[in-house]
Length: 269
Image (tube, rainbow, N blue to C red; front, side, top):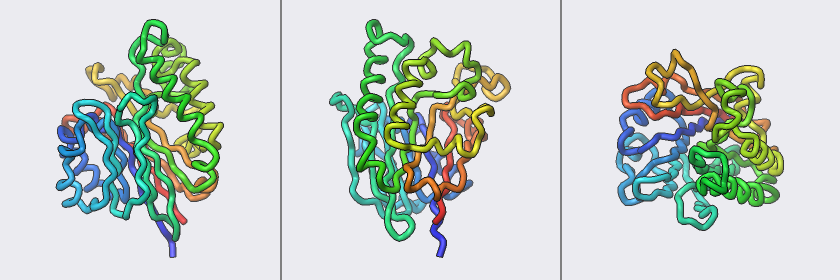
């Protein structure tokens, strides 16, 4: 008997404000698991009832008032919830759970990596230093025991690592999210843990691939000045089970949208 798991990751930019388009997403693709970032609400105010009504009885929420926040919602039971406080600053930027899959389970990490501010210099911009420190902690942790098992890491990782993950490699080399210091550290995190970039398994490196378009553009779709900030990584043991990834670009054009599009990943065993 085949086990098929459909997962979606989405920086929602306020879950309460955008619950209507989350419900639209559920109606459109009926995912088994939803990973949200930038939920922007404390756990007590999370719209649990709306998710339960939609069939998502199982939740792992790590939120805070007005900022950050991650949440994993599931039709399948969730166990072994872990919330890691990166850099010991009290931000809600990570939650991990075990999800039943293929007669056993997979470890699912849901991340919201700091954006890093505007100036790519930690001496004058502490936010950029925080981002690099956060990724360094990811590098030291997300290996060995964490990746020797079936595992998937998703979320808004706020780095566009490759040339065609941004609309202009040349123009964005000094722009936070695509600077060499970020992209090199990002790749070292992925490679050290033996993680596979699942999205680029299905879209060749020479093809443009974006998940985020700024609100500032008058016509975001026509301008198409995007970046790939949202990612799906899988561990070696899970890699054979990834059957596809898709960016739901059309969701960026829904009413009162997030500036990120959802990314879908499908696993089969």
